[in-house]
View 1 (tube, rainbow, N blue to C red):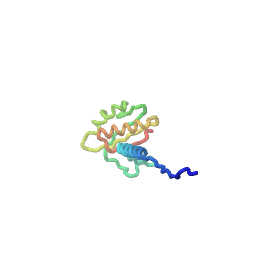
View 2 (tube, rainbow, N blue to C red; view 1 turned 90 degrees about the vertical axis):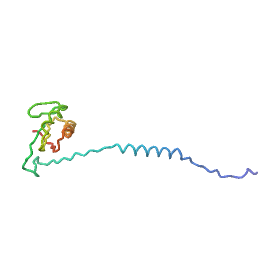
View 3 (cartoon, one colour; view 1 turned 45 degrees about the vertical axis):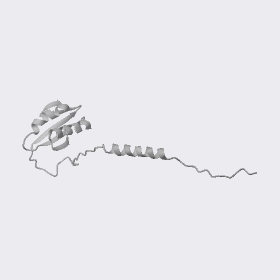
View 4 (cartoon, rainbow, N blue to C red; view 1 turned 90 degrees about the horizontal axis):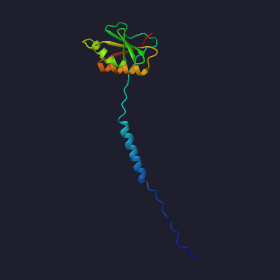
Amino acid sequence: MNFGEKTKRRVTVNITSLVDILIVLLLFFMLTTQFIHMEILNLNISADGKNTENQTIKKPIIKITLVGSGKFNLNGNEYNLLHLKEKLKPLIEGPDEKDIIAACKKKANVQDVVSAIDYIKEVGGKNISIAEDK
């Protein structure tokens, strides 16, 4: 009984579609990582609440108190946080550089603090400090 020759069949795996998917994934991740923009906010906060580096202040100071719920106090008047740019711009303008203190009450949220710092930077404020208003 001769059943014929036993031939070995070659099994091949077609990986063309796998390579195509990997290339598409690689391109996707390469393109999406290009759009990530990280901004760093440098903060110098001392543990005891006192400024040990510079005890004498020679520059004029503008104090903005964030009271929470999107409101702030400037020169004793309470305004909406959206009006910060227009109220702060006349105070910042001038030849001398001014220090700006963003004091926060306990009920002020972090988003209000970040928005206030963004508004201050848009108007031209450079020396911004964050403090707790007691």
